[in-house]
Length: 513
Image 1 (cartoon, one colour):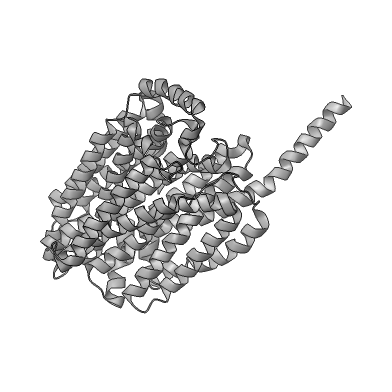
Image 2 (tube, rainbow, N blue to C red):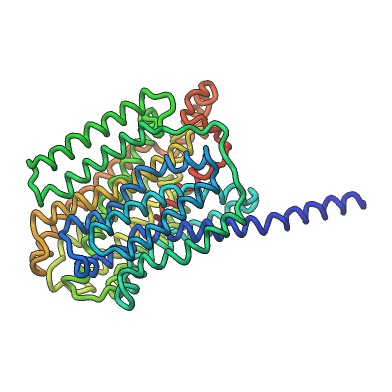
C-alpha cells in the first residue's frame, strides 16, 4: 500500500513539475504566434494613412502587404528545417529577434521603399519563428494536455487574424500607423530572454536543408509577383514585366522538376499525385487569393469611398474576419458527421457568393446595411472552410509525410494571399484608380468579380477530394506504402519527431491565419 501511495505521489510530483514548462511554452509560443498572425492583416486598414504619409502608388501599397506574405511563404519550410538542424529554441529566438528588429525599422521608415524592405525582413523572421512555435509547444506539453494547449494556441492565432483590421485601424486613428509596428517591439524584447530561460532546446538528428529548392521557389514567385504588380505601371509588354513573368514561371517550373527528381526536396511533388492532396491545396491557394485580394481593396474602400475612419472600418469588417471564431467549431462537428468535402465545398461556395454580392451592390453611396449580408456570408463561408480543410489535408498523406504536407499547405496559402493582392490590384488599376471615389469603385467591382471567380474555382477543386469513406480506405494504404519505402520520406523526418508533429498541428492553426 505504501509503495502504491509513493508511486502516486511521484506521479503527482512529475505532473506538477510539467506544469511550469508547459505553461511557459504555451504563453511564449502563443504570444509569438499572435504577433506573426496579426501582421498578415493589421496593415490593411492602415494603408490609406501610409499612402498619405509616405506617398507611393498602388504597386507600392501592394508590396507593403506582399513583401511580408511572400517572404513568409517561401521561407516557411526552410525556416523549420533550420530549426531542426541547428536548434529549435535557438532559431526561434533568432527569428523573433529578426521580426522584432524589422518591426522597429518599419516604424522608423522615412519612405515607402524602406517600409517595404522592412516588411520583407519581417516576413523572414516570421518564417523562421512561426513553424517552430508549434514544434516547441508540442515538445513541452505532455500528450494528455496537448489538445487543450493547441486549442488555446489556435484560438489566440484566430483572434489575431480576426482583430487585425480593427487593431490596425484603432492604432492608426488614435496614435499613428507606425504603432502597428511599434506594438511588436516591447513584446519581442520581453519574449527573447524568456524563451532562452523557459524553453528547452531540441534538434532533429537527420534534418536536411534544400537550399536549391528554396532559391528556385523564392526567385520564381518573386518574379511572377513582380510582373503582376508592375504590369499596369510599366505595361504588360515592357522588358521588366515580361522578364519577371517569364523568368519567374521558368524558375517555378524548375522547382517542380526539382521536387520530383531530388531525393530530399523541401516540397515532394509526388504528394500532388494524390487527387485529394492536390484538390485541397489548390482550393486553399485560390481561397486565399480571393480573400486577401478582396480585403486589400475593401479595407481601402471603407475609408476612401465610404468615409469611415480606420477604427470604424476595422469594426465594420468584423462580421467577415471574426465570424470563423463562431462558425469553425460548428464546421468541425458537421465534418465529423457528414465528411469534410461537402462542408469545405459549401464554405468556399458561400465565400464566392459573398464576394459576388459585394461586386453587385458596390457603389459610391452604398450603405453598410446593404454590405452586411455579404460580410456575414463571406465570414460563414470562411469559417466552414477552415477546420475541415485541415483534417482533409492530414487524411490525404501517410504519417511520415504530415510535416511536409502541412508546411506545403501553409506556404501555398500565403502564396495565394500574395498573388491575390497582385492580381486583384492589377485588375483594379486597369479599370479604375485613386483619382476619385467613382474611379476607386469602378476598379474595385471587376476585381471583386475576379476574386469571387477564384474562390468558386476553389470550391470545384474541393470536390476533387475523395469522399470520407474513400479517404479512410486510402490512409492505411498510404501508411503501408511509406513503411515499405522509408526513402519515400524525403525529409528524413520520422513521423514522430517534434518537427513533424508541429507541422501537422500547424495546419489547424494556419486555418485561422
